[in-house]
Length: 107
Image (cartoon, rainbow, N blue to C red):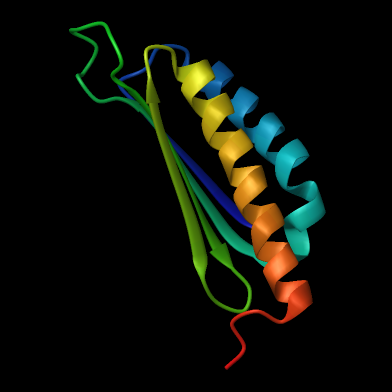
């Protein structure tokens, strides 16, 4: 599974990257054989000059053999936005696995 984490306009990039990597590894381990690529973007969309709900956590999965799952969350704290996005991603992958097991979507 190829993983890329991009962090923009946020302090503590190294610590944040390690945190995101650890949480992703733990959350996605049961789905690893179904995931081809993971792209994560964590950023302060206002550039750090304003407060409020301006921290974006975006997680995009490219699935095997095809398909993708994209989750975005915005909040006032990046850790909270990332945690919520990760929870939603796990739920979405659980639904995806269930559909595959039931054969849903196979013309």
